[in-house]
Length: 277
Image 1 (cartoon, rainbow, N blue to C red):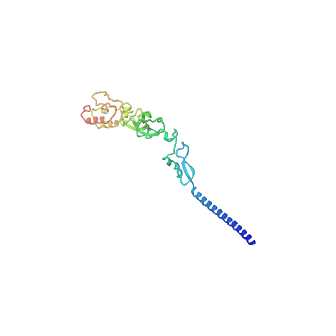
Image 2: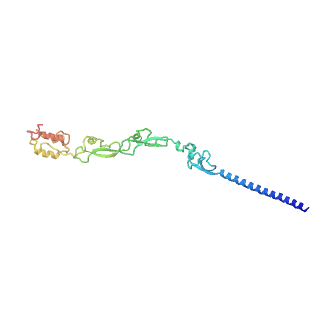
Image 3: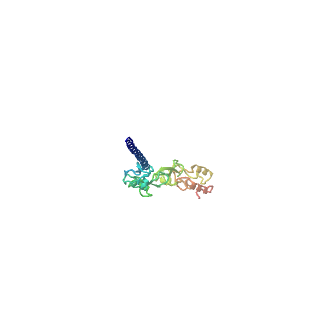
């Protein structure tokens, strides 16, 4: 009877022991499966930085950064910083307004160059306006008209010298403009015509060519003639006071002693009488 009791107790103990063992094995297996699942989830989840165009349509190709859960950036974005416009074909979406550079009207205008020695030469420039500014024109090669008729320039003009005994000698000077001032000429030999035909002179009484009155032209007369060469005569044309006469030193009456008069003197030098030419 006592042996049967112990057997019963032993069987109950085995049942409890087997139950505990099963419970421990179950808990172990459960914890192992949970660890495997957590490792799998961590492998799938990955945070990366991506870039996309901003939502504003007035800031052109400005990019903004955002975080994405995945291995690649979503469509419409890129992993390259400041290159968000590439996914839109090279430019982010924008609204064209009058303030955007791409919507401004570009107009080609023409103005005088800054050089002062190139006449009425024009140069082109662009403006973002519907009309050219003052002093310029939309018509090529007509910049001078828009500047008042002529472009600013430096021009060489010619005037009579300040000396009054050098004939109609001209001297050059520079003016800022396209037209020579009054009393001057653009021609290097035209200064006399610009002041009425003769430059200002200091005329003297040249007198007769036969200075000693012997009706002959000799070396004596040549000496006196040379003293007046290049001067202007106030007594031209010469009127003799008595006849016969060899005439005045200004033989052709043009108001000055020059090569013409010297040739006339040479032709009559040492002739029997100086009034025979």
